[in-house]
Length: 135
Image: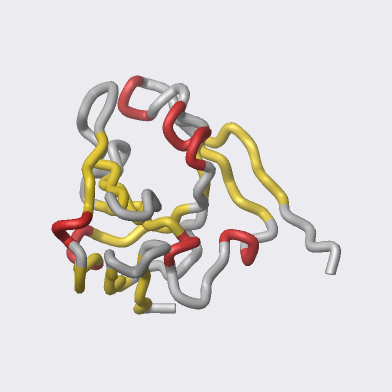
């Protein structure tokens, strides 16, 4: 996959994505924010995300160091993307928002150690999540 469209649940926020490494960057994180939202994300470069519609509907949330920028639709509450703290030249995209993609398409997902963030001298891989369909 080199390009895709993505949207929030209510379809107000619509994105166009251009990938440099397809969906091969799929991962989760165990920082306080990611543990609570539980999204599987993939990366795109900053110039790989275009907001096609709904820019005015995006709400920004920041915490801790206020470096990462987490974006949500203010209407339906769905997290669509974030500018990464560990690499501010990339956005993390919620795979559940990408047309034709589900977080359950990834049977094994690497979980990054966000509790010990790379910018704070920690990081690396903290584990893996697996999904096995009963169907």
